Structures are given as C-alpha cells and as structure tokens.
Image (cartoon, rainbow, N blue to C red):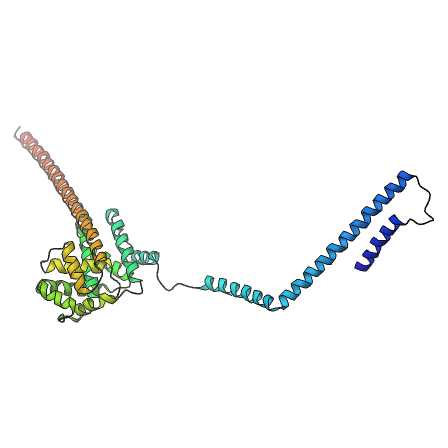
Length: 327
C-alpha cells in the first residue's frame, strides 16, 4: 500500500511537470489551475506517506524497547508498583488507633454518659495514655500505674458526689484501663504498693534505690526504677514520681525534680515540663472542686429554704384547722 501510494504521488507530480500529449488543449489559466491542484494532491499524498512511515517506525521502536533490557525493567517496575499498591490496600495496621481505644471505652462503659464537664478531660487523658502505650519504647511499670491512678483520682475525685451514685468513678476507671488493654486490678495494686513504699521510706533511701546503689524492697518498684532509663518516659511516670516525692515529704519543685530524675538517669527537661502541666492541672482541679462545693452549698441552702417554706405552710394550715375547730 505504501509503494502504491508513493507511485501515485510520483505520477501526480509527473503529470504536473510533463503533461501527456493527448491532453485536450486548454487555456493558460485553466492549465495553471489544474497544475496547482495536482501539486496539492501530490504533496498531500507524500505527507500521508511520511506520516505512515513515521508511525510504523515508532511502533517498531516501541517493540524494540519493550523487548530490550530497558523495556523489561520498565515492565517489572510497573508490575512492582501495581503489586505494592495492592499490598498497601490490603495491609492492616496492627497498632490500635486513638479512635479504637475511645470506642472500646464506650463499649465498656455504655451508660450512663460521662458528665460533659469531665468528658473532655477524660478523653484527653485517655488519648495521651494511648499514645504512650502504643509507643514501642514503652514498658509498663508500677510507677506508671501510680501516676495513672493519681491523675485519674484527681480528675474524677468529685464525680460520685455530682452524680449521686456510689462507684460510678470506679466503673469509669475499669473501662478506662480495659480500653487501654490494662488490668484494672493490677494497676490499682501496683499503685497502692508504690504509694505505701513512698510513705514508709525516707527520701534519701529512695534516692539510693533510684541510683541503684541499694535495692528497693519490692521488685515491682526496683524494676520501675531500673527500667525507666531505657524505656519511654511518659507523663504518667512523671506524675507517679511527683506522687512518690509528695508521699515521702519532699517538696515538688523544679530543683528537686531535676535531682530525682538525675538519680533515675533520665532527662530532666521532660519531667520539669510535666511538672508545670501537673501544677496547672492541680490548680484547675482545685478550682473545679471549689466550684462544686459552692454549688453544693447553694443547693443545700435552696433545699433548706424550700423545707422551711413547706413547714411554715403546714403550720399555717394546722393553725387554720385548729381555729375552725374552736369556732
């Protein structure tokens, strides 16, 4: 077909250049118009031939590229990309998300709903604890347990008074621990063990236990002191450390915190930063408790006023009945 097209183009050009002798006589203007038309046709045919030849050459080059080493590499890379894309789509992250933990909490504690003024603090604490636990450097210990329990009790200490139910905060704590894959009984027992140790042990002795020059009487505490240097130091451990300091009578200030973290062989900047947050939260909780007490006093006063008004009304009715009986 290409050869035929080429010959047609050449013939068209030949007709233009060398007209046949049997061509009918034409005027000059007619012959010029015919020659222009044939030139246009011939050029168009040749351009079509060139385009067709270029397409065939491109196709041949593509086949050669695909058959060559670069084509094989391109094909392998493309296939690897498709496999990787499919693998990413099929991959399941084994680490639980914050959303999973919060959903697990509400599954463990479906009702009654947590009071709004406590909910945001609780979710924030749960989120921070979750991010600490899922870190590969984290290792659970008794001081961490004491910090978690101390913070939770400080946060939810007045909860039962407001709800009027005994044990509501304990149920929330159990759901909190289970949502984070912790055993509530173990966390509570470990926290109480460290708290009792702090109250019964002088500060100097505790520092020797932290430094490792002497062993703590409880293995759980000794493991917490020796292991924190190589594991993740989180906010709950800081709060546990502050609670130990308070328990043995040490003032919790920046200088003392730096000294105690040095004994634990951990960076003091994280602990001192947690100390500022710890004090701010304590002030907020103190203000919240004062507000709750004011609300309780106000409600008691209103109740007393209602009872007094009711008693006066009953007394007035009784007096009216007595007067009517005398009359």
